[in-house]
Image (cartoon, rainbow, N blue to C red; front, side):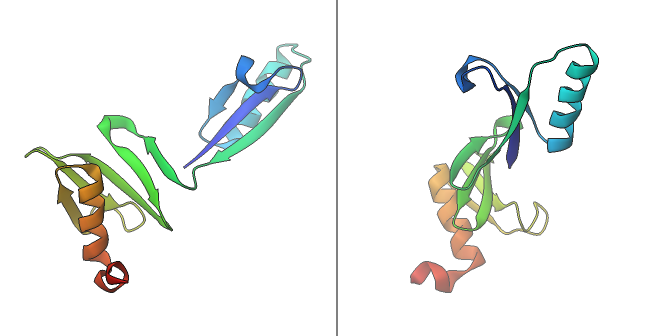
Length: 118
């Protein structure tokens, strides 16, 4: 998951910025501001999630575990479920558990039991 931040170069990063899901949208926003007469110089910064977790819509969370992107969410029967986003929701095996961590561990075991034993 990558986010693009547009920041005026005359300000500190925390003072105000706009964020976009694609570089093209960020560049389009800068161009629109220039067309409106804004002569501010903007910088575009790319933030890419490489470890940790990030909240998604519908109460889901994206976790980066090694080279896998794993999505967890509350299961309708209780507890949590997890699937590998790289394999796709329909093709990935699922892991279930009382916590997101338990669901992720069960998913990783289902994907590659030999790697988990090491």
